[in-house]
Amino acid sequence: LCDKHGLSIVSTHTSIGMDPNNEAGVMAQWRKVFEGLKTMGAKYCVIPGFGLGSNLKELKAVCDYFNKVGKLGKEYGIMLGYHNHAHEYEVREGECVWEYMIENTNPEYVFFQMDVYWTTRGGHNPVDYLKQYPDRIKMLHIKDDFVIGESGKIDFEAIFKQFYKNGYKDFVVEIETPRTLRNKTNADGSKYTQDQIAEEMFQAAKKSAEYLQNAKFVK
Image 1 (cartoon, rainbow, N blue to C red):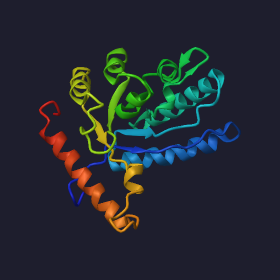
Image 2: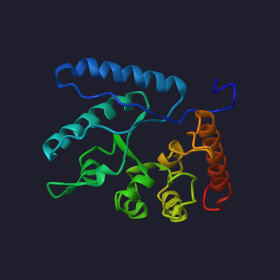
Image 3: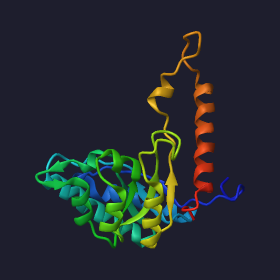
Image 4: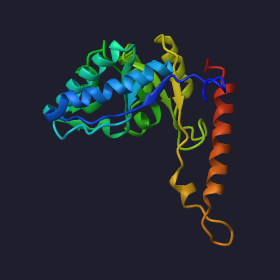
């Protein structure tokens, strides 16, 4: 279907949980994932969130697991990545979780897809991290409150410029249905239908695409 419409699959979001009692079985599942992605011609496989434990010892075990999975992915020419939300910026035993993950995963096997929205919501400047870890953040996840660029909370121009300066170009865009839209009502007090919500979502996607296509800082 993608070939028919001239689309290429660069990356997917995929996650398989740890199971120390069945490591061989878990790795067999990952092999199937990587085989499929290789067939599709993908470059990346991104874990979109994961149970990170409650202390650094448990977090280190997660990092070790990512290293093993990433090493396996490399056999198939697939790079394993991790996608953040805001909670990765919590401090645990004096360590910022996200920074700890970067510093305790092998750059040969694991990269990071930085969600610029959640990084901002987590109290950090995405540009600072792009400068601090120029070789670890290989993809951007572009997101805003709703329509890309409308909130004014995120300096997309500075983010893209630093990302390109680091030598990378791959990014994905997400338009998430905001709670305000899910709870929106009509003039008569009736709740928006799924079709009405979908229509506003498509309009938001169109406006976001126009913003990015017209932005001189986006290549």
